[in-house]
Image (cartoon, rainbow, N blue to C red; front, side, top):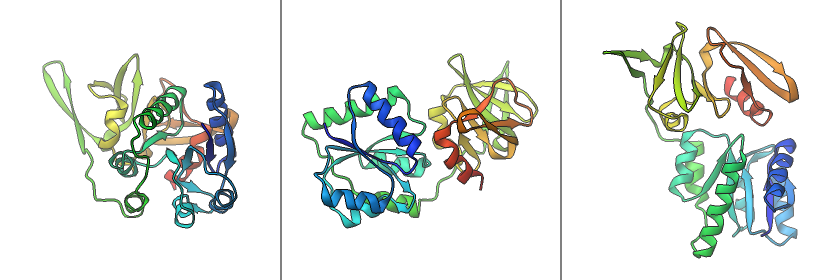
Length: 251
């Protein structure tokens, strides 16, 4: 299987290539911009599979396909919000949400191989996806969560939540009052319920409210550490692969 990686952050591209090597695959090329990718496709045989970031250094990666007709299968590597993910799902496209982990990568490759073996189409409607990215549909998000506390039901406004976190296979709300409440949802199930303007998933364990961030500290290995107003039970770290996207989010 011939694979290429299109990713503007070179450390992220190298990391993905190392992950692929661990499971027996190697990227034939790592491309980092729209211009470089167009030149490569015009002068090389197209691969079986492309790992494709959306936002490249010189524009959206969709611009590549406006110039070059590509029949390769594509797995997106993205930090985009739920609008984009819904578009990918509707178009039967697989995607890996950054930061990518080994299990998600293996599952994505397995899905690709199953589609190929079943001779299912791998074509993509880029126009539909681009519409979601450029002009997403209006979507409403949860304004409060209802928690059972003993025999009582407690309503917690979203604005009063500093973060959601996972611990010991449970998911918790941490409020600005410094209280923690167990909820019957996973972080993945929370994703479509939370406004991406207000909440950011810093890792597999945390969703953080932008209004709860008290301090942002440079951390080892080009990462960031977040300090919230009241939550201090665990370190909240933004991985190196997500730092660029996180900085765009807070701006």
